[in-house]
Length: 264
Image 1 (tube, rainbow, N blue to C red):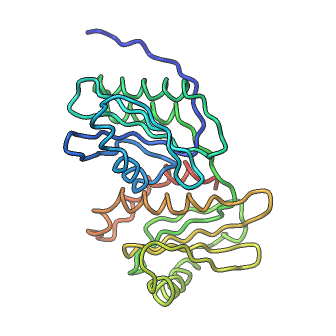
Image 2 (tube, rainbow, N blue to C red; image 1 turned 180 degrees about the vertical axis):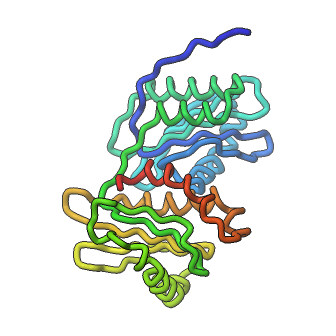
């Protein structure tokens, strides 16, 4: 058995990154992503798939809105082409050699049939994204009133004995979402003001995402993360939501994803 030498790579700090595999038919499978939405990754791959399938190996830099997109793709005589995507602010200048070193290492791990857990750990260690302050609590609720997930800042006194208040709060959210949010198509962000605290609400696929946020001039909430967490929840628990039978313990590990984006 041949042991592969471990590479020690300095982590790169970007707004988001993802890894996918693209087959000859243009079908892609996302194997890792954080800080970049699944739909956005699929859009980037779709826009560039003809060039990727033709060249097999290459690099590309593109612009999307206020962001720069860096794309690396590798063939390695495999049935699927490995694609690594980075997202960062347009004004930032990243060292392309550093990005490529990480991409090349992740590609090597895939080619060596590294386990999905080890591959994810390697991605987490080599790719860092900024977390945002200001979120006091997150509620994820079904349209039927089931509290799928709830996390709050335990240092906030307003949440002492909150268990007695959650049911009433959920009812109010449901009424609000049915009267206001449900009139819109797609996931749109709604805001309810409470002085310097606000509730940001997203309702999609019969699930309500409520973020209680304390905003100030020093720490401005990254609203992009609100959409990302809702998208990742719906993607990760799609079957569990559609076949929900009252067991909310299956959603507990979503805290790991929440902690990637928010400091609560």
